[in-house]
Length: 101
Image (cartoon, rainbow, N blue to C red; front, side):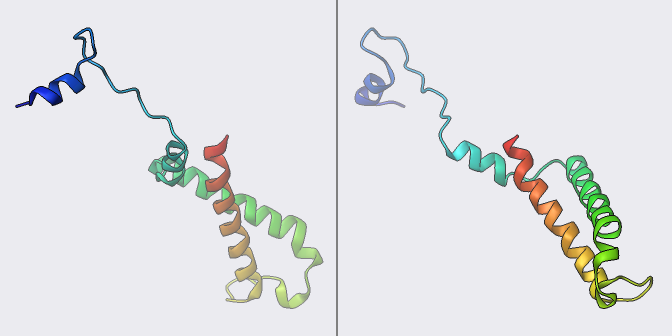
């Protein structure tokens, strides 16, 4: 139940109800950025980052790296770690850039 003062605040001077305007402040951008993407979009971003990261590592970097940084199959080595970090960096860059487009 409203008091008379609350009812006067809700109504304008001519007696019509005043509706609040939708708020489109700067926090709306932050909310969209922090909102997790849909699962399908997350998987597409992840797959793209892994494929792009592996393509960059094996097609562009692999031949220029010292033998210690080249990944050998079925071995946990520095090359695998570098490939993993490259894929993670591309995924985070995609998560950061795509909401801004």
